[in-house]
Length: 73
Image (cartoon, rainbow, N blue to C red; front, side, top):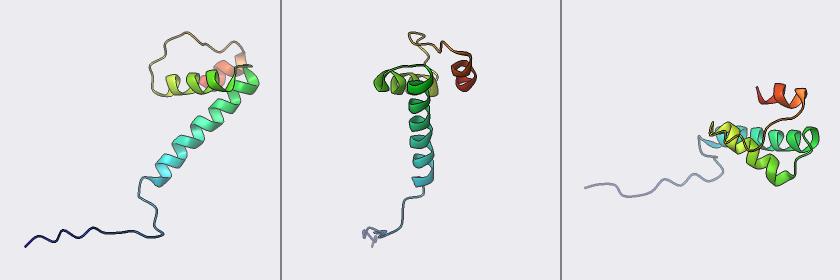
């Protein structure tokens, strides 16, 4: 007979939690950086970070400052 009981983890984060937090942190830092340095809106900054991290790179938004270029690299 199969044991169909589910394991419930109370108070224990899933194993992917650190990876998720690093990803959210990178997106947040990049969004704030491009908002401040490149003078983009928060939505455009978030869009640029996600498009860059997923390596799609449409090219519709590009860094205009040397600091922005270095951060993107």
